[in-house]
Image (cartoon, rainbow, N blue to C red; front, side, top):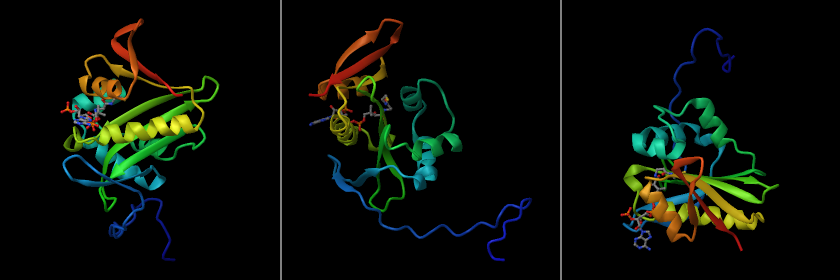
Length: 189
Ligand SMILES: CC(C)(COP(=O)(O)OP(=O)(O)OC[C@H]1O[C@@H](n2cnc3c(N)ncnc32)[C@H](O)[C@@H]1OP(=O)(O)O)[C@@H](O)C(=O)NCCC(=O)NCCS
């Protein structure tokens, strides 16, 4: 009866599983920190919630366009259990896989042949090339899937993201219906 779980008493806390080295593509930041880049997976829920908790309030606003104190578990689950046909989502982690330092995704609309991107980088890991590395992989994957375009909405005062997409060859235009938002897009040859 070791596996019996009481419906009324919370299960006893289990020791944290030993950290296993995770597979992934090695990446070194401009300031020499090592990371691994790999697809997100269902076991990332807790780490994704911790990563979200480390974002600054400004970064949260820039990522989800509103204030949010924490990433609810059901949202984190949804973000980590992607439909691989529609969504490509990647994370950059510490070499031991313990913490997520960046998360980025595209959602593919096959009817429109257009992929929408979203990205967030741990505030202690910004300005060292991680955002560019993840965005480049999103662009490559969108192209591989036959998308004609990759696009995303960026707050007009989000200078870091506007610089990043401009460097990556995106065009941009203020949205006619909302002057606080810039639509950034890039055709995929
Ligand atoms: C916007 C965001 C994704 C940028 O990520 P990042 O990892 O800091 O981006 P990068 O490091 O790749 O590029 C930015 C910096 O690298 C510099 N850089 C990039 N390539 C370079 C190169 N080849 N040589 C020298 N510098 C370079 C840029 O000038 C910039 O420097 P700065 O931050 O000092 O101005 C990150 O700030 C973030 O998570 N913001 C909150 C969420 C968000 O805005 N999401 C976008 C909407 S979905």
